[in-house]
Image 1 (cartoon, rainbow, N blue to C red):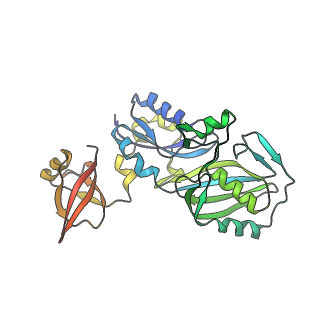
Image 2 (cartoon, rainbow, N blue to C red; image 1 turned 180 degrees about the vertical axis):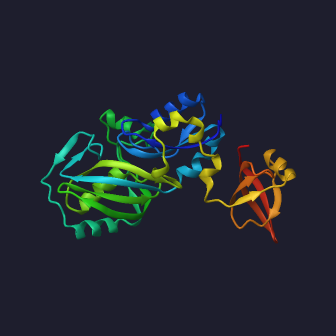
Image 3 (cartoon, rainbow, N blue to C red; image 1 turned 90 degrees about the horizontal axis):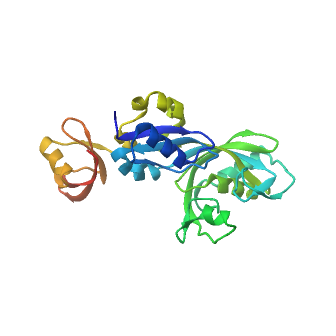
Length: 291
């Protein structure tokens, strides 16, 4: 059985990301399991899970942009920013016109800053914010840089609306819903969330836990499926050995800082980094070697 690779998991609502990791560990009987991009327990959607030596590639997907479909509901605010929290305040719901909603959504496109919610896994002073929040503490959080690449209205209701958003890592959709509500002069919470994409992993290709359990081997994608954005380089037998033993090699000039490396038999080795350039040539050093 393959013991290194990536699974495009469809996380169900009600499970934490850690619960999914634990399920995969038990199913495959392997300890080295990790995930890219935590999802709230109430949320569903794409959760890439890494097995074995492929866990060394988590960072290359964790930094990828993500897409979501979210529902915003007007009329109340909670301590968590979603509809699972304790209600802090209520207000009459005055549904804005479609044009106003679209205008406010468009105003969020681009670079901005966002304050992480108290109910989040961000650490301050060695403790996660949600741990502090559960003990009744509220601490000052520094704004973080985020980017909204695209945001659009999908459907409207009397009490809220659905929207799609593509954004950078570290963007909290719960906080985005609150901020959108503020601009629309309404209290608002996130009442539904599904992640539709992480990098090149899409919802339509994700697998339920039941589907994974039914065909464990078929569920696993090769480790290099995470790195479709990088160019490829096939090495000679001699250079493959050199890279696998931690030595740099000389190759034709790459034109890219990072490159996927394959041996002469087209087996994925890992990632190389261009460390120097000379006329027409590059010095390529091994960065992450998996095989």
